[in-house]
Image (cartoon, rainbow, N blue to C red; front, side, top):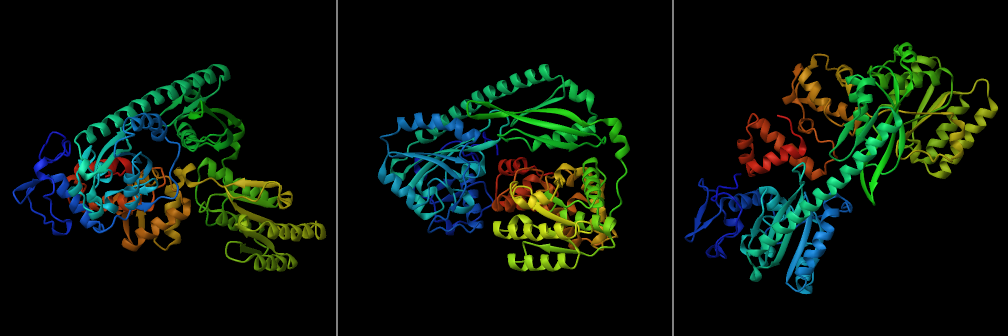
Length: 601
């Protein structure tokens, strides 16, 4: 929406003659003109469209229904920059009947400054308080949610609110954007009783947003300088490949570019992304496409208590000459993938199984731990019976009874989700396994456990002394190059041999983060298969969630918004203006949603 089109832009407040003349939301009609005449008065188009969105979202006109968000981030770029700015500005209006409010980019109230107790009580009654989400889709037209929808600062006077109880207030909202990326971070809102409405509210809100933006720029520059300083030191002193990573910065030294080819560099960067935002040092191994294993050591960099980013030092753990002899991948049924990291994982599991060492297999849900263990057992110990027991399905007593029966029969044993067992059950399991090891050391069964990467059995537990090896199965986002093979494998297993995936569709799948890993990919293919049973799967055949490339985890409401935008774009062949009109939002809003969710069309 153009900020210069005065008939459609919310850049200024309504005229005084329009106050108190707007109709009840339930009586709103939908004329084709850019504004409608009511009792001789003109309603601005953006406000009319906002009412329309509110009505189509089934907003309750009798009471606001803002959702409460349990966990609101306390330390972000926005909150750090806003803290001092809003403290100073709140002091300026301490004796005024005005509340100064800060929200995040979803409209969730982060902080509220107000000295007038009666105003605070009134705001509490309509849930305009920290933790509540004042999105337009939940409470109707308001200075916070509508500013986010329209993408511009605006003042909502009392009667212009869609929701009845909010008509007693006037509120001015101004967007806070990141000075470098332009991303919307939140809203500064000033709210007062409708009788106290003043056009200066909007000016004050804009001033606060500008000061926060300036402070973000100052902090960004300071953090970037600190990161750059430590990066240069690491490059000079180590003489090794080094990468620096921050919120908006990624730097790679010449040594990294010379030592690793483009595929290895891409794999290293992908592993490094997981370090963004980490506040503790750690070291991890990365199997690269060239066949070598690299050791990545991450060290966080701080300015006072604020994380500036981190330095990753890289060292070859396995030399190239040794790596050349490890390319042959053991053939396992029901297992697909040929990336270096996946081959290393499969080979390690087979080697452990061949040596009959007891094994703990660690990894995120959905990475394929059970499939790998079953396939390795068939390949190496196909002549032995195996009992696979799930601690997440059986009660502790049921599981331990079946473990005892399995071990008495001399069968191999796999216990899934061992991390859900209580300390007492883990102790009993340890005693059962210890007895077997003592009684039949020459012909003991093979035993394996699976655990969740972040909820494993405590390192100090006696049970782990019986398991000399723990292998971590990589998440799918760390071996995205295996997706074409996985897609073919999963389609064949689902009986969809007549379906193929186009290169463009595979490339789109490889842009996603796959937080649910291979299980998530399988569910996506199942959904595709319900609509198409033969032919070629193209990008437009993929579910809405696969048309967005954002790597952050979306809330349920954000996922619904993303799907609605994708569906509208698909319905209108990518015409953004038509899709925006169908959704009842401005073109500025749909462009913002496309950028925010990384929607590809």
